[in-house]
Length: 165
Image (cartoon, rainbow, N blue to C red; front, side):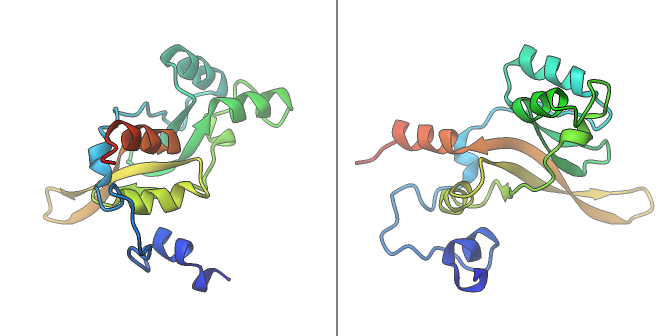
C-alpha cells in the first residue's frame, strides 16, 4: 500500500530523504540542472499546429498552460500523432483533447533526490516556481509558473558531467 511505500512518501512530500547511502548529488537543488526555458502551448492550439510547432522547434513534449497560468497538463508528439491516426482526435481539435493531465510537479528548491524518486515512475516532471502576485485592490495569491520540463536524461546528464567520484 502507498502509505508504507517510502518512494511514494518522498514523491508526495510526506518524507524527506530516506536513503542511508545517498549519492553525492542527492541533496543538490533542481535549479542546478540549468534547464532551458520550456516551449509552452496554449489550450486553444490545434492538434495539427501542436505537431507542427513541436517538430519545428525540435521538442518531443510541451506543457499546456492556460493564459491564467493554470498548468493543464503535458502534450507529447507521439501521443498526439497516435490519437489522430487512431481516430480519437482530429487535427482540428484543441490540443487539450490529447493532453496528459496526470503529471508530477517539482520545485526549483526541491532536491535531485526527490526528482530521482519521481522519475522512477514518471517519464518527466514539470518544474514550477511559485510567485506571489498582488492585485490593485490589495489581494494577493500564489501562482505557479512553469520553469521547465525535466526528464531522467536531464538528471543523468547532470550527474555524469559533474561526477565527483
